[in-house]
Image (cartoon, rainbow, N blue to C red):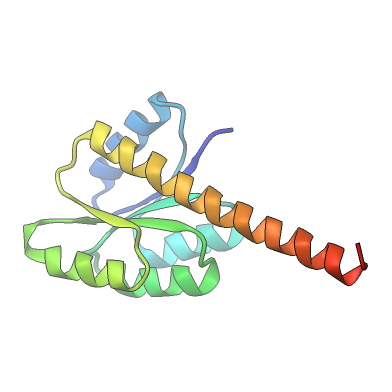
Length: 142
Protein backbone atom coordinates (compact mmCIF):
# COMPACT_ATOMS: atom_id res chain seq x y z
CA UNK A 1 0.00 0.00 0.00
CA UNK A 2 1.35 3.39 -1.01
CA UNK A 3 1.56 6.12 1.59
CA UNK A 4 -0.56 9.09 0.52
CA UNK A 5 1.37 12.33 1.01
CA UNK A 6 0.16 15.89 0.53
CA UNK A 7 2.86 18.53 0.03
CA UNK A 8 1.72 22.07 0.86
CA UNK A 9 4.06 24.94 0.00
CA UNK A 10 3.65 28.18 -1.93
CA UNK A 11 6.98 27.64 -3.75
CA UNK A 12 5.76 25.86 -6.90
CA UNK A 13 9.19 24.67 -8.13
CA UNK A 14 10.08 23.33 -4.69
CA UNK A 15 6.79 21.40 -4.39
CA UNK A 16 7.08 19.92 -7.89
CA UNK A 17 10.69 18.82 -7.37
CA UNK A 18 9.93 17.29 -3.97
CA UNK A 19 6.84 15.55 -5.35
CA UNK A 20 8.93 13.94 -8.10
CA UNK A 21 11.54 12.77 -5.58
CA UNK A 22 8.87 11.20 -3.38
CA UNK A 23 7.04 9.60 -6.32
CA UNK A 24 10.34 7.97 -7.36
CA UNK A 25 10.34 6.41 -3.88
CA UNK A 26 6.83 5.00 -4.45
CA UNK A 27 4.76 7.54 -2.50
CA UNK A 28 1.35 8.64 -3.78
CA UNK A 29 1.83 12.42 -3.83
CA UNK A 30 -0.59 15.32 -4.20
CA UNK A 31 0.42 18.96 -4.01
CA UNK A 32 -1.20 22.21 -2.93
CA UNK A 33 0.17 25.73 -3.20
CA UNK A 34 -1.77 27.19 -0.26
CA UNK A 35 -3.75 26.26 2.83
CA UNK A 36 -7.19 26.52 1.25
CA UNK A 37 -6.22 24.26 -1.66
CA UNK A 38 -4.79 21.75 0.83
CA UNK A 39 -7.98 21.76 2.90
CA UNK A 40 -10.03 21.15 -0.24
CA UNK A 41 -7.89 18.13 -1.15
CA UNK A 42 -8.15 16.77 2.40
CA UNK A 43 -11.94 17.01 2.27
CA UNK A 44 -12.21 15.11 -1.01
CA UNK A 45 -9.49 12.46 -0.71
CA UNK A 46 -7.63 10.28 1.77
CA UNK A 47 -4.26 11.56 2.95
CA UNK A 48 -1.90 9.82 5.37
CA UNK A 49 0.82 12.42 5.90
CA UNK A 50 0.96 16.15 5.15
CA UNK A 51 4.18 18.09 4.71
CA UNK A 52 3.10 21.66 5.47
CA UNK A 53 5.10 24.85 5.00
CA UNK A 54 4.83 27.24 7.95
CA UNK A 55 5.13 30.50 6.00
CA UNK A 56 2.63 30.88 3.18
CA UNK A 57 0.70 33.90 1.97
CA UNK A 58 -2.95 33.96 2.97
CA UNK A 59 -3.67 31.12 5.38
CA UNK A 60 -0.35 30.28 7.05
CA UNK A 61 0.78 26.82 8.11
CA UNK A 62 -0.40 27.18 11.71
CA UNK A 63 -3.95 28.16 10.74
CA UNK A 64 -4.01 25.42 8.10
CA UNK A 65 -2.79 22.90 10.70
CA UNK A 66 -5.60 23.87 13.08
CA UNK A 67 -8.18 23.33 10.35
CA UNK A 68 -6.60 20.02 9.25
CA UNK A 69 -6.80 18.72 12.83
CA UNK A 70 -10.46 19.77 13.06
CA UNK A 71 -11.30 18.01 9.78
CA UNK A 72 -9.23 14.84 10.16
CA UNK A 73 -7.44 14.60 13.51
CA UNK A 74 -5.56 11.40 12.66
CA UNK A 75 -3.67 12.83 9.67
CA UNK A 76 -0.06 13.32 10.67
CA UNK A 77 1.48 16.66 9.75
CA UNK A 78 5.16 17.48 9.36
CA UNK A 79 5.87 21.21 9.47
CA UNK A 80 8.45 22.57 7.04
CA UNK A 81 10.26 25.66 8.22
CA UNK A 82 13.10 28.07 7.57
CA UNK A 83 15.43 29.34 10.32
CA UNK A 84 13.24 32.33 11.17
CA UNK A 85 10.20 30.19 11.92
CA UNK A 86 11.51 27.41 14.17
CA UNK A 87 9.46 28.75 17.11
CA UNK A 88 6.37 28.71 14.89
CA UNK A 89 7.07 25.09 13.94
CA UNK A 90 7.38 24.21 17.61
CA UNK A 91 4.06 25.99 18.19
CA UNK A 92 2.66 23.77 15.42
CA UNK A 93 3.81 20.68 17.30
CA UNK A 94 1.92 21.91 20.36
CA UNK A 95 -1.15 22.09 18.13
CA UNK A 96 -0.76 18.52 16.95
CA UNK A 97 1.93 18.46 14.26
CA UNK A 98 3.99 15.27 14.35
CA UNK A 99 7.37 16.93 13.80
CA UNK A 100 9.14 19.61 11.83
CA UNK A 101 11.99 19.78 9.33
CA UNK A 102 14.23 22.67 8.37
CA UNK A 103 14.32 23.93 4.79
CA UNK A 104 16.06 22.99 2.64
CA UNK A 105 15.58 19.40 3.68
CA UNK A 106 17.36 16.29 2.50
CA UNK A 107 14.97 13.97 0.70
CA UNK A 108 16.08 10.98 2.78
CA UNK A 109 15.38 12.85 6.04
CA UNK A 110 11.91 13.71 4.77
CA UNK A 111 11.28 10.11 3.68
CA UNK A 112 12.24 8.87 7.17
CA UNK A 113 9.91 11.41 8.83
CA UNK A 114 7.06 10.48 6.47
CA UNK A 115 7.52 6.77 7.20
CA UNK A 116 7.57 7.41 10.97
CA UNK A 117 4.54 9.71 10.78
CA UNK A 118 2.61 7.13 8.76
CA UNK A 119 3.44 4.42 11.28
CA UNK A 120 2.04 6.58 14.11
CA UNK A 121 -1.16 7.25 12.13
CA UNK A 122 -1.57 3.54 11.32
CA UNK A 123 -1.11 2.62 15.00
CA UNK A 124 -3.76 5.16 16.06
CA UNK A 125 -6.19 3.83 13.45
CA UNK A 126 -5.58 0.24 14.57
CA UNK A 127 -6.21 1.13 18.24
CA UNK A 128 -9.47 2.82 17.24
CA UNK A 129 -10.51 -0.25 15.19
CA UNK A 130 -9.74 -2.56 18.10
CA UNK A 131 -11.73 -0.37 20.52
CA UNK A 132 -14.68 -0.31 18.10
CA UNK A 133 -14.60 -4.12 17.75
CA UNK A 134 -14.42 -4.53 21.51
CA UNK A 135 -17.34 -2.13 21.96
CA UNK A 136 -19.41 -3.91 19.29
CA UNK A 137 -18.78 -7.33 20.86
CA UNK A 138 -19.67 -5.97 24.30
CA UNK A 139 -22.94 -4.48 23.03
CA UNK A 140 -23.85 -7.81 21.44
CA UNK A 141 -23.07 -9.62 24.68
CA UNK A 142 -20.15 -11.66 23.30
